[in-house]
Image 1 (tube, rainbow, N blue to C red):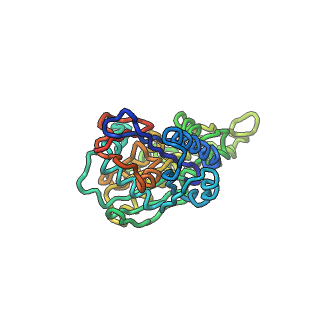
Image 2 (image 1 turned 180 degrees about the vertical axis):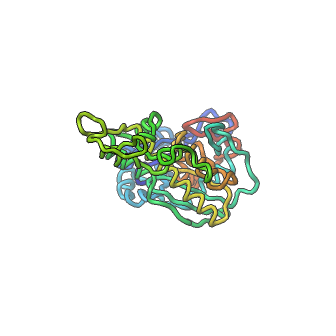
Image 3 (image 1 turned 90 degrees about the horizontal axis):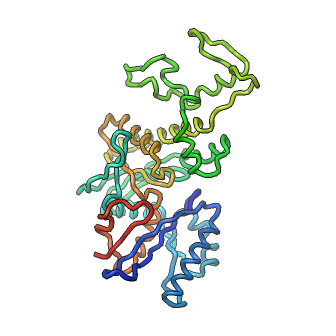
Length: 354
């Protein structure tokens, strides 16, 4: 249960399965609507009791994240089951290790030219850097099973994007904001290298489309300053008849998405250099499989490392910690390997015993 989203995983058995297998189901709720999440869990509990009897002694909720503490009493009083709280960092590492080592077609790389290329399993899993992007960002160096250290992070994360976009636009949900970014043009608000040099700055490897200053055009345009023949000339309202300059929400969304993603990517690269880590995994609900976000993070890692390092993503990137908590008490005979050999399944994870 994070600052913005509560991520829920629940296991359902397949009654006709010859090997007693089942399915992991994934769903999330906005944390400020935690009551909806609790009500959903209540329904799951009732369905279980109808199928297996009224006793709920073996039922429990494995919880992690700050909300596991903040909402502990509410969860316990409402659900009437045992609430077992697990350390957030340990759950993140347990969950990611599971995805990396046990689930085929889960980890992938991304670029515009070569989207979603699934990564081959590596014998040398460790060390790696986990960059978990939720409301804020944590960066964790993992040296081996249960060997980890939080090495850094930033408070400019998904919550920052959500909050600023709420102030600037009428978007009501995070997905609405990402949809805006898909159709936006950040050059409407960002100052680009080409705006300064009139061309590429090839000597230092910067294209004319590279961002020199996020939202760097806004002040100039709002104050009616335009470039004409190489000289600044002031015009009230920047040529707008009503005297007020407006900016497209879509442009602002793309600009802010680039700013936050580029910042996270650069910090992740610096941490990987400092701690001598080559493989960088990005997780957390901020990513949501969004192409622009993944491409920006990937580009940042490739650019700063001069192509020597690679960003990795996961199909279930928002549920790493929840999976880790679940694995603390996995069902009997619940298997792992080869559970996704049939290919990608966007919103649930098939499992069979091995």
